[in-house]
Image (cartoon, rainbow, N blue to C red):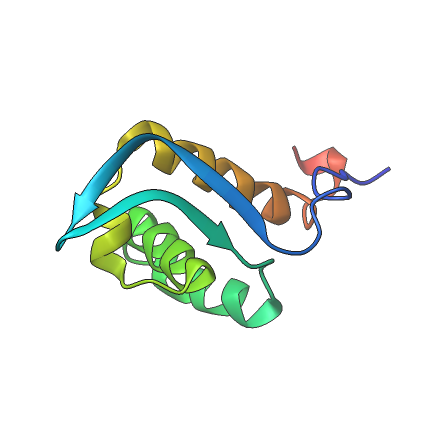
Length: 99
């Protein structure tokens, strides 16, 4: 049986930030991320070879249609929530026996 963490997670996902912040004069209080695609996975894996945090940062920025520095400024708590959401898609690729 494979994991189905994302079976109810189709389409865009809204993340309301626990710690909103200002970035270059704009108030950031939420992000809307599109569902990841294979091309996002390919880019993530390429970047993760050298820096896993930069890889997830770039991936989330791409999924939310923002520049990397916008993601860099969010709190670790909010980053963790978004990272866990993305990793839910990745865990669907790994059979239960490997977890």
